[in-house]
View 1 (cartoon, helix red, strand yellow):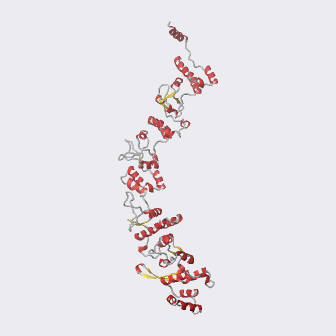
View 2 (cartoon, helix red, strand yellow; view 1 turned 120 degrees about the horizontal axis):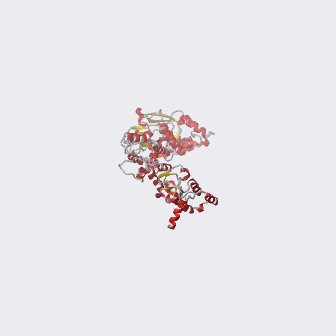
View 3 (cartoon, helix red, strand yellow; view 1 turned 90 degrees about the vertical axis):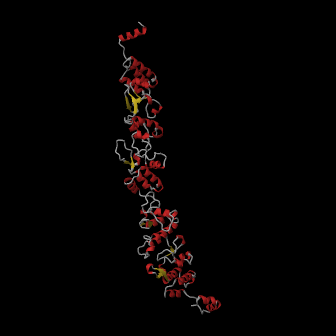
Length: 521
């Protein structure tokens, strides 16, 4: 076979001999025969691939492109020297038929990394356009997932310094490569990749290699003894690398159970310390962790002066913010301590409210308190003061008609708590024997609670029938009031009223005495 140097030296002579058939072109069969004799080194394989790529497959004596590709790959074998770890360098035989993938710049896997045996060495693939290798040989790009599966394969034969689960330096390099490709991966690819790595010790920390869920980002608040990520090459944990690590499960804050156990149960943290910590990590709290905080009885309740020295722990939703107004109502109050004044607009307070800490009692609670003699006065004042802003939307007089919480006065002057429909605000109807709302409450505000100004005509008639006036003075007062209510009586009711025995009879002697006093006799 004429060498390239000879062809280039005497091109005219070579062309003349070719035209006369003295020097025929090499055939595909001859190439295959040569390839079957021995493996090619990298330089020879480069030339062979270049010839194959430039070959006019349409003129290969009727052979189809698929047949040509298959026969070529089955015949071509590469021989290359590779690092064998502790054994130094050694020969590696690579049948081209075993190649399935190539290294592409799109996946950021650089040539200095170990690659699977099914990947064409970059020292060869770098000489050719990737599209040509993909089209002619049906090779595909080596994916990040395929690469990681190879690195984690127990039988990959890689030396310790290339073990992603034991070498912190190598793991750091691999994580950096993945991070560079992270933004270009599909959601499904991200999930596949996370599924491969989450249960592997691929995170370098100050306590050795850890599973992602066991490792913590640097500067984990107040817990320096935890396994903190430690990049030996000084790689900055930000951007896509930070997103990658978070997707794998690396923690940005200590587990809440660890916080409760080490800082609250066994430590000296109070609720203020806890909330300061939670505010510092609030951006990294998951919905599950927030729900757990709402349902955890880890928040102290204020104790009465005569109560136990150790406060009872409650859920946030079982406690009220520590204000004097709510404290006077006898509600369970959050024990905020004395180090710092409670500030309802602080970040700590806002988070507590988010977790369920109450700012005010619900309607049912304030009505029960207003029905309790021990808290009645304060609770009723609170109800009236906050009715429009807190309770008007839920309050329905018919639904609270069974509760006695209206401060009232009986006809004999006895104070008592009445139901909304039992008392009235007009003092004149007291002449009919009706109980009245306490004088200090006889204004428009009490009307909101469904307390009527005066009884209906039906109630008036019933009261007259049950207890008519016993003397002229009482009768005079009663009839003066009834004259103001004439318009409320129907004709039929007025007829009944005329027939009722409600005018007290005066004995003759009494009438004479009264008449004498009137005439001056």
